[in-house]
Length: 425
Image: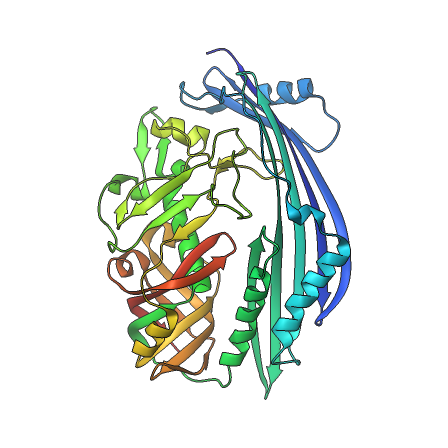
C-alpha cells in the first residue's frame, strides 16, 4: 500500500475551581492545543507532534523520518467519511459563578455532619475537540464536555488523623455530584472509632471504589497491545489472557465490558482518536473471557478489527485504552449483604496498585479506610492494615454481588464480597 498519512488536532479547554481548607480559593482557565501526524510507509509507522506553529508538511516530514516501528501490512487508517451530530452539552453553558455554586454545594454536603473536616476539592470543567483526517478519505470531528471532581479530606480528632480521597466525573447537571459528596460524608460518619481488624484469610466485602482500584490494573490483561503482538520473527505472540479466550475462568455471575456508547458518561464518544467508531466490547461474559479492547495497530497485530479504543494524550501516538468499564451487578442490596455478615470487613479505600495484578492476579495493598462489621452493623473503622490475595482466583467464586453500585471515575462496579482474602493488621 502507498504511504498513508493521518493529521489530527486536539484542543482542551479547562476551567478549574480550587478549594483549600473548605473554602473556594481560586478559579483558573487553561487551554491546551496539540497537533500530530502519523505516517505508515513500507510497513513501518512514524509519529510527530507539536504545540507550536509547525505546518502540516513539516509534521508529515518528521513523522516520515521517524517511521521505524514495524507494523502489519494490513494496517490502514479508516476510510469512512464521518460527521458529528452530537447535541450541545449543558455543561458548556455553566458560568464561573455556576461552577463555584456547584463546588459549594459539594462542600456543604461533605461538612454537614462534621464541620471540622479539612477539605481540599478541585472541580474542573473540561471541553475537548478533535479534528482528524487522513489520506484514505477518513474524517472525524469529536466534541465533548464533562465535569471532574477530586477531593482530599482530613479529620483530626483525639490524636488520630483520618484521610479519605476520591474522584468523580459526570456529564450531567443532576444530583450525582451530591451523591458523591454524601458518600464522602458517610465515610466519616461510619468512622466513629478505630478498631483492630481480624487478621488472616477471610471473606471481605469491597466497595465500588476499592474494587475499581483492584480492577484497574487487571484491565491491562485485556489490552490488545499487551495480549497480541508480533515477535522478532514476524509471528503473532500471545500473552496473558489471550491464550484463555473462550474459556470460563471466572464465576458465571461475573460480567465485564468496556462501553464508549453509554449515554451521559464523560468518556463516552461516538468515535475514538483514530476515527474508528466506538462500541460496547464484552471482555468477560458469564465468567468466560470474551474479548479485548484494541486500537488500529493492536487490532492489525491480532488480525481483528479495532474496537474503537485508540486514545491519545496531547503529544503521544494513540494506544489502546478503556473508556467506560462496567461490572454487571447482582440481585442483593448492600444492606442485605451487611446483614448477612456476622463479623467481617468492608474495605472502602485502598492504596495504589503495584501493577503486577494485570499479569498474575496477585495483589497486596495498604488499607486506607475500611470498616469492621459486627452483627450486620459498622462497629468501627480500620486503617493502616494491609490486604492481599489472588483476584483471579477469588473471582472464580463470588460470595455476593450487590445490585447497587456507583462510578469510581471511569469504572462502575457493585459491592462485591470475595473469599480467601488475607488481612494483616
